[in-house]
Image 1: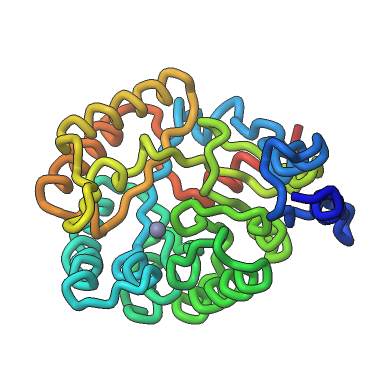
Image 2: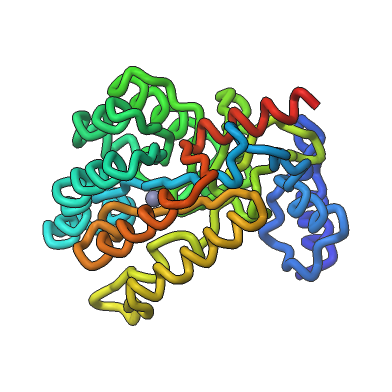
Length: 323
Ligand SMILES: [Zn+2]
């Protein structure tokens, strides 16, 4: 790179946007060439602010449990342009076979859950979207077609996120108040869009075990983060790709042990146990058996507040707004 080109790259990389934020365009610079403003700006774009872990949970409960399902069905395949009927049938299984069994299981254990649903799935099966809210569960945003936000421009991401929320509301009659970015692919623009929409919470980030407030460029946003983790997600344990090297590497009963240990530690700490599942992944017989055991194990404990992500976000924010 010539000095002139380096100068241009630096000027671009340090240019301040309208709101005084550091521009993220610095494609000609390597990370080791960034000055402090650049690497610090990236890190501070979205940060964990104050903890929103409450001193007590409702009814004197010892811990909170937030079970969620990402009803992706066919959309991860569609998003990648994989349109073969064979591939799409794997997602179809989630809607046709798994969801009814999951709804029965949640009812049997009296567990309210949060369902994050791409808008395309809700358009494919409006009855399914409505069945979640009718059963007392939460329906929340999970993108338009499970798009990858970091591959989109800010305007495209914004338009899809707004359209997804409108679509879920039109179909279910309930305006969603929370978002989980598809694949937890939270871009540098996601939080601005989420704030513009006035959403209560996000559930895509991993900076804590307990709920916390998101901070954008040093500014507290009021947006509650209900944190997730790959450890408490079925996908990394069970996914399989026929023509790639990806194979399930752990038995369902060993995953049960991990999740029981995660729950036990949350219970001991008086904190939150949050779980992310996918109907087309967890919804097979040997895995549903294990999920049933986990939910029975959790529901069998005294002092567990079983709640939706929305309930937990509302409670945590209200507790801290009072103080
Ligand atoms: Zn998803």
